[in-house]
Length: 88
Image 1: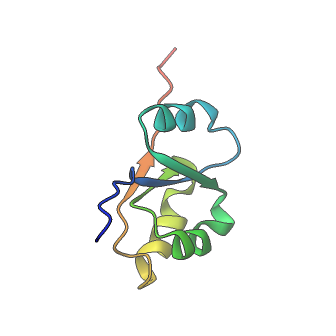
Image 2: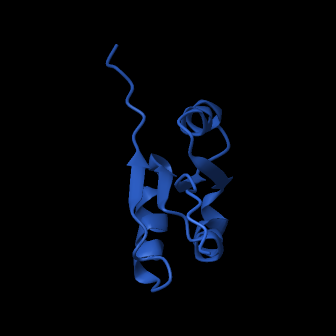
């Protein structure tokens, strides 16, 4: 008999140390969330093979380029968070 257990999507959140509200929202939505910093992002993504990676905007260019260069992670969708500050 084959198991058809459904697992919620896995999200790897790459941040600079202050993602508490974002991670809470993702977990509240029923997603499996792990987190790391930019220096470990590619290694963690290779090991965990998440369904999607969310990058803090500050890390977008370097980390996303490295993820897309690596054959083991290039298939994983990447979303960059943008923190907009309204004009004063």
